Amino acid sequence: MADSTVLPKGEDLRRAVLWLAECGKEVGWSFSLVEEASRRFNLSPKDEEFLIHFLHERKRGETS
Image (cartoon, rainbow, N blue to C red; front, side, top):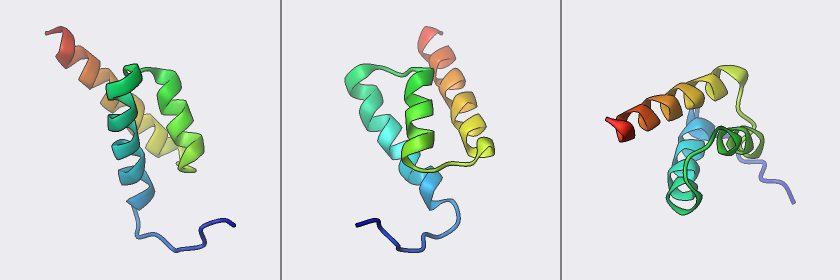
């Protein structure tokens, strides 16, 4: 049965970031992981773009 709960604005993105943080610890950050989060949490293209930028900045910070 699908979850029919109405989420507050931005809640899906917040959940995706938390999921990515957890999965990133286990398997490492990757753009395919962002794509999976976008599908899993039904994110908009704008939200996916935010996550890609976030990932890019995070990876850049790790190499500094």
